[in-house]
Length: 330
Image (cartoon, rainbow, N blue to C red; front, side, top):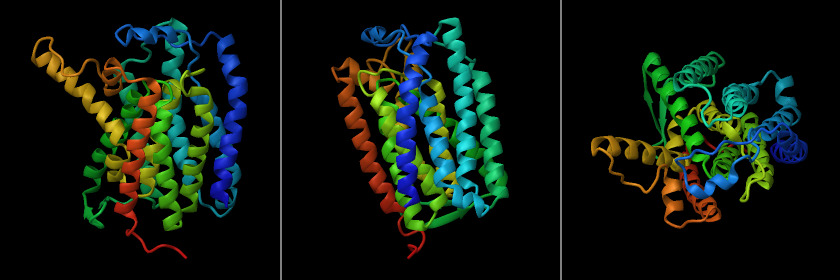
């Protein structure tokens, strides 16, 4: 019941905040600067308000507090840990967006600044999870239903690499209207299902709030987008996805539920490496993958539905891979 409540509150709060936020961002002239090396038709989006991720961050926060109040009274704060972790990444993204808007350019913080801030947040979060007993250095292998013991230091390095990599992969995926939100929606529903199966109500509340916030955000972000989530939103989403995976002690599941994030990132890496190795030749028409498909004639709506559909299928496979991890709660 409280999981459904979290979804409903987040949806309603995000939708209401969006009605005020979008006009406010327009008045502030918080418009997105479009990269000149992207598809030429994207230049028509120049000036569309960015930092729209603020609306679902607020909506999720309200839902987590109200629907998760019973857990907090009982001394259970797992959902708040994940929210605060994601909020830190959202704050990093907000600073990046603010610099872009303030200086009217498509780059904000330097790569090294973002990396160090994200790395510090990742390490702090993992240490916190271990301290409160949510995380072990035993790596759970989906489908095989076994755990591989790891040295804690090695696990910390692994965790930091996975978190920073995944967060930036979500950021790369946010390249066409609705795409990052649409792909992340089935991922959040996967976590809801896993939380219900295992009796992890506290994580189900956060995952359901995430799903509700994204559904409401798509009212404003589906093509043609009235607002972009910006790095504020995409870094928050990446951290939320990672936070749930590590809090539920199954980080390897990110390979399946994050298949689109992975494909987008790999396409970017392959393009850069091949371009440098061949002195100017390309494998893709344009990287990342969604731009390659756009250049091949795919519309933004098609990208949204195909990529979200692929993610949904992989999330179903992921659920099958973890459903025997614990005996279902009655």
